[in-house]
Image (tube, rainbow over all chains, first blue to last red):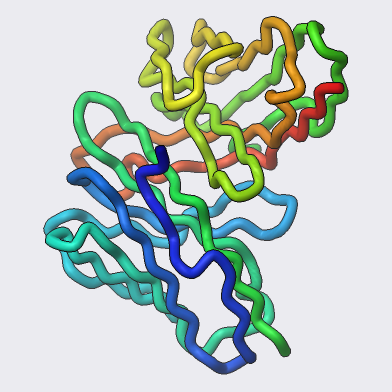
Length: 112
Length: 117
């Protein structure tokens, strides 16, 4: 079964609005990452948050992590049409390997 | 720097045929992995390698074989293709060292779309 589940599965907003995506996971993690995938392309890393961090910012991105609830959220502020893509969370469960387990993704459509 | 290069980009196979998806990276990454992406399922880990000569199974390894004879290459072999293996396959790599920030951030290839008839 998937380690990460994103919510919502799909999100449609207008340009300039904020977009929030959530990720829930099942087991303890070392870090959690967010990736973006444009249609027909490979995934691109956006941001990483470690298990001992609660919030992180990068440009228009803000990520929060609540390890007690096993959940994370990705906020994209002042969205643009170019932000239209699928967004995935990925969890590193630690241990001797570097396995990243991905969630099912949120499809974000930003209308111009 | 080419990053992660996957070939072929598209492939059509008949049931029972075998083939190899190629993956090469030029970033001296120790860690390499293969994922498959299916609608509504996200990405699922097939096999991974933490260094040359070392491979291990991921979430969905059945029907696939890998080897890692060099740091640069990590081919994925389909032994006897089945329609259930119709998917988009992604190769990804990272430095794999947990001791510094960003170490296990994955760099992805562009993907290989496989159809099994």
